Amino acid sequence: MTAAMALRFQGKVSSRGEADAYLKIAGDAVLVERGRPRLLILACPCGCGENFPINLDPRAGPSWRLYHGSLSSKSVFASSRRNPDSISLFPSVWRDSGCRSHYIIWNGKIVLFGKYEDDFEATPQLTPSMLEAVYAKLPNSGLIQFAEIAESLESVPWDVLTACRELVKAKRAYEGGDKQRGSFGRK
Image (cartoon, rainbow, N blue to C red; front, side):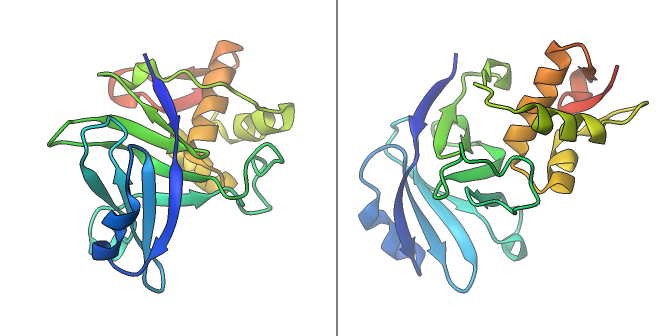
């Protein structure tokens, strides 16, 4: 079962040391920015009390990608339903120490998972044009990762995953199994 809570963005600071003063409750977040986004510091959404740094700078090692609500105007997902101040993060955060929580940040909300991401139950607000844009990117044979589709559409991957799964429900697409989960093709 998923649990969702609002991401409470508390602002920007220039160093990691400044962030903790702004993080009071689970779901509070601060962006560390020095010329470019470096870290998103998050008060862990599980309520364990830890402040967890999420690397946004690929030059510093494995990193996450930060999406702001005001996506590229080219994106079919840049719609009026998205709060221009909302934040999304990709990929999911799966802590391998401490509380071991697993969550995504999507459109200003933190979706906290149980043991498996199968618990993910999106509330799709997709238009036909969004679904068709994703469908057009699906291969006739073989599979493509939803993140690759998102990149080509300049869209938040979680929106594209939702569209892909809606296409599966409509029997227009299929999802790979096992190690190919998250990859989709046309039926």
